[in-house]
Length: 286
Ligand code: ATR
Image (cartoon, rainbow, N blue to C red; front, top):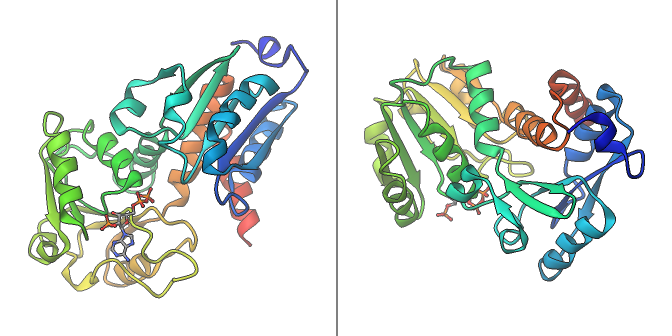
């Protein structure tokens, strides 16, 4: 799509995010900075959509001529029945965080997993081939990440979850893609010693409960990379303690920025101004 086509009907680009709640989303500030940096007239607005209005909201996207939206908690699954197409990754993950509107035809994508893996590779581990990885949690965020990791040639991916059944079901679902094993939290300590990368996808340690931690760092080897999807706070207790014992640490800001960057690229066809996007999020946090 060319810039002229993108802007032709109103002269500006309409973008936004739906969720419930939505007030604290950093997506508007990040994408508004991106539009400015790209020199694109337009707006990215937060929209508070209750579950019972998700279908109406999708019709509204078409009626109002939004070029695209992000979808956040708790609607990443809810939106799927209203879409015309689902890309392969979103289909496999079973969740959508980005929708592109092509003249009334809605396509769903999932940029969370690829956004995360790009960030991990850029900031902490350049090559994931042959790595043993432990993923904590088996919810929506974990699904995106485990799927994206399964395409990276890892040695083995463990999924440990409070509810072990969910971890085991995920491992079973994707056993054709990689060596993936589901575990209970109780089985964690015995296996942590052999892992190269630990990734927390649970909300444990997120603002405002910043004193919580999902795992005892004493079990994590010093050579391990410890990664947390949480970006508020930028440094969780898990990351602070891991860093203190000598581990390389990786926070969630890069994932957030990269999932937005991929979404913007789907909407505009232009390379996303990643540095400006990151800067805007950081500025809004201080
Ligand atoms: P998200 O989309 O952020 O992944 P989710 O789908 O609700 O959200 O998943 C939350 C994940 O965090 C789950 O793996 C959940 O464990 P359960 O499946 O056992 O519920 C995990 N989680 C949330 N709070 C937790 C806590 N206090 N201790 C351990 N795990 C927790």
